[in-house]
Length: 282
Image (cartoon, rainbow, N blue to C red; front, side):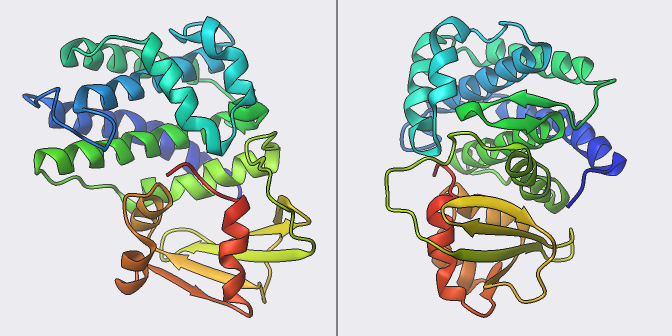
């Protein structure tokens, strides 16, 4: 999966469009309503505000992140398994919870991010969580996913529908996961479990949305590989359901029973071993 001008244009168009729908969803929302097990609606929007501010700082190479002086070193040491602890530190430092203020801040920071990247090379690499290198297009794809996932949380809490465009959802694997794997994920996937020797190849395909991409776990290291006609595992998925599953919003059982995620291949039983390394915070 390569980055094309169409991908770049899509992600730059999707960020403000999803933000607009999220802010419309927030109109009149009770800030103290529980959106997740740990966060209220206001907490959730505050989390998104810190992500947007951090993204602006990363792109500009400055210190606009409101918690930069506190969590800069922590961010570089963060792994997938410690993202929640980092979020706790950031959220404790960023105390604003008034929804109108948060909405204005989110709107302003995302406008600043889009302006800062207007003439940007989408493949320019920035240093991200865990010392990972991430192309700018991957940074924006990550932001689109964060907006959609957390809008889904808020909409469910309010008893309202939320629509995620499958093309937007597909950007998470196609531009974020592929980008961070290609550029180097640093210590982001570090863990203290024994490393499985050998090779496991997994081909992911967002059915009807994007072409397949193959990852391989080789002696504990995840790499991108050319298309493998006979991978160990094939995963065909609806990208909206797949992302919700990856982040713990939809169970694996439900995703499989509804046919939204299908697993096949020569050795499909190896998928859990692969995903124990190529994992995401849920």
